[in-house]
Image (cartoon, rainbow, N blue to C red; front, side, top):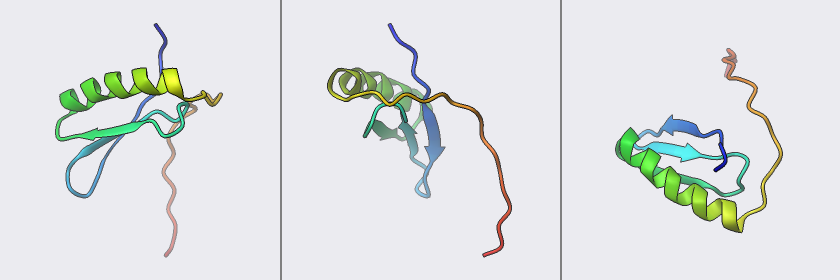
Length: 68
C-alpha cells in the first residue's frame, strides 16, 4: 500500500478530472466523484507499475489576482 496525493478539478462540461502529479501522465475523468475515485484506484495502480515516480510534496493551494 502507498498513499498518493490526487488533484481533483471540474472541467467546463461538469466532468471531474483527477490527476496524480507524482506519476507522470496519470489522470482520469468521470461524471461523479464516486466514479472518479474508482477510476483513480485503477489508473494509479497501472501508473505506479509502469511509470517512474517524481519526487514532490504537496504544499498547498493559493489564489492570486491578475489583471488580464
